[in-house]
Picture 1 (cartoon, rainbow, N blue to C red):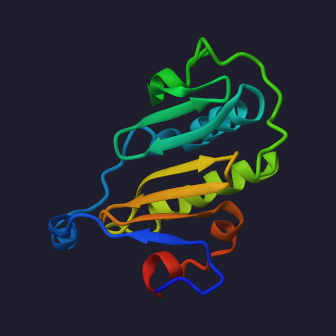
Picture 2 (picture 1 turned 60 degrees about the vertical axis):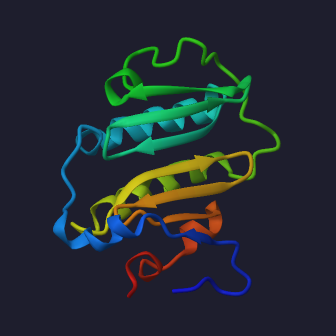
Length: 167
């Protein structure tokens, strides 16, 4: 489905070989899948009060990549176990939510919950990774078919499920 003319949605098709083998694969439950609530709680906490402005959750490989407002040129890669420890990021001190953020703090959890829906809605076409950048307001999605999508968080939250599953 092409984006509407007033949409800011961008889609990039990936490797044709991966798309051709899509129906020969299925989603395998990951450690992050089994700890969604805890993972989402931690990401929301880090984004709202510890200076993380961009988080990418790699559901299939159970890791998170975090960018800090105070050190945006160096990202941190954490396993889900590292993320869920008491101090997942020693250099993530308490910090105010950025004034220039385009995503309101209460929307963070809504975006994360939509990731959960896209992860489990289909056994073959599923979300492999999802990212949120609160500064520029963009959500990034990478699906099992190797398709990538980028769009504003509010547009993402307002999107009908059919956009993602061709309904």
